[in-house]
Length: 500
Image (tube, rainbow, N blue to C red; front, side, top):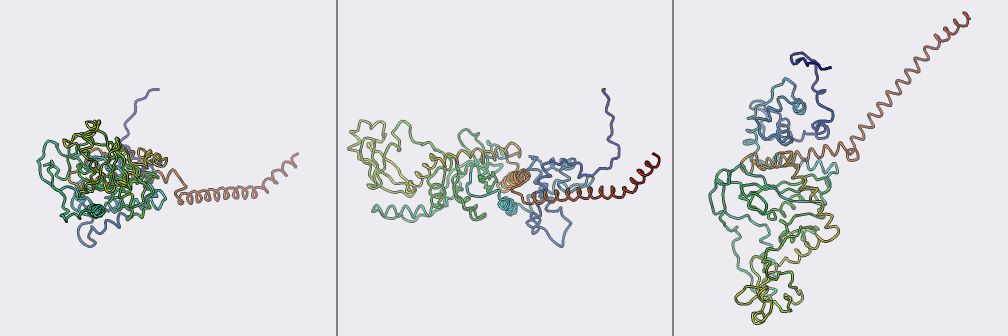
């Protein structure tokens, strides 16, 4: 029967906040399996012990940031309004139903003035990774790395062109040493010392957010952006590294340094890595070979002219140190440049009479030039890994690991756009998002799989023992009651016999 619901908002009710949060709520799982006490140890040096007004508890402050990124609330004002009315948020933060919450300016002040110049949130991220390692959720044996762009909070039409220094490459000293060795082996003089300062180039610099970079990539919208270079572990997709650069920095440039950072920081014994075509460079291949890591790199299409015979159709003879063209002619070594490329050149007298000259080279002197890097052997070896059985299985999991991690961040945690301006603030956004994803993943894994949480087994045994004790007590009590009732039973039976 249809009835009109009466308004009952003004009635007084006796409620307990603990009972108003569902048992299967995500924040309950997080609170159960994640101990946030380490946050206070990391943030306490930024507070004064004996002076000033009492601050918001550092753990509560971190949890407020955490809630904003966990549920994709972009505005700090909106976040505080959500906390004010959401009982699950209040329960997670430890606030009572009627207890006032901090002002939204507390978040922005601490983010911009107290913590921005420090690496404290990077340390908090590392602590979460260490927790996953202790729980056997991270092995560090197979790592997957990729980058995604966050659109900068800047108009792409408002910029000015400036000459800026390019990104320094960490391997230049080693490359110059190998180049000089190669030149000496071929009877050439060593290269003269040259300052290793990055070359200046003209780029677009945003007048709104100068730290961002103008990104031009295939199948991507042009504009100012930041890049998050993220690494995840292959076992459970836990994020192990986050590194933010402007949008115009190539993926391969910071890769080896970030790989070394993870090895040194977490003690990983990396056996294999899975990378896309953006990392398929000689420098990355050489770095992986040096570290004895099985690299699986996606195929990278050559950028040479498709109308001419490509380099792969020329055979390199290592013993004679020459290239042999499809027609059987030799290309001999000529020089090794500072960029690490050896030059192999054909003889014009022979090439001028070749029937395939038009499809081989456009050089007016009828010469064919092929470049070979001094680290070319390492790149060939890494390329061959992709076609092996192990390589196919490793690369197949890229879409299940790092690509899925980015998809989760963009779909659920507001990762398509940079919330703030400036690389330090955007780094804070990327690290906090990674912390949220890791904590959520760890809590769900520990709750789902008792094998990886010994404390759950102990808790289950304890509850079973309590149930057993309670059942035993009830049986004993029932038995004692039945014993005390025996005389009454005999009396009743005796009365029945007399009456009969």
